[in-house]
Figure 1 (cartoon, rainbow over the protein chains, first blue to last red):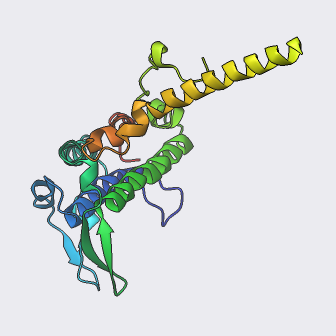
Figure 2 (figure 1 turned 120 degrees about the vertical axis):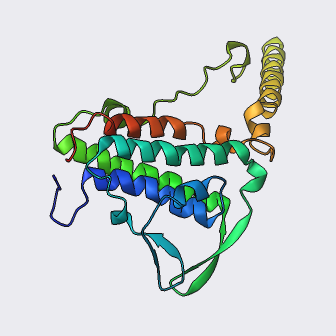
Length: 162
Length: 66
């Protein structure tokens, strides 16, 4: 398994981490669909603050591209269904989360941004890791993952002085 | 005198145009939708699904382990 440094994660470990990070945070905010995924994870541990964390190595998929894709797609389905089912008015709802001995009031907005930034942060790592190995990933590396274009402007409603 | 009157007329016309443009901008649907609490989060986070696709398409063809 190629790693940029002995202690660094492999491509497979990063891809798995993206999927499992989605489950952990969506579970904490009680998003629809997390139970079906969390019930498939066998390894759990409790941190000093009492939070459940996934033991990522318990899901031995890091050398199977098909399984990594399956978990990316399964966890995306959870994210997508949540985004489709929730509205802007839901963003301000909060839950309590203890971390480093302090209790935080965490909003759904904070959590969704946390997971979105987690995806992008580790997606950037994947892009670099693949590039270092000479593996092309055009959409992630060449297009930076921005493959959804904004809608075309309606010519009749173009702004600016008339 | 005539020149000054013409200048005033032109400036007035420009101001009216600017005011109409400002009114139009204030009616821009983006500025109202962003305050609408009934907007689906799917539309707020539009583009994330494309990023997900780019992740999948990066991993799917890999001859793992690597």
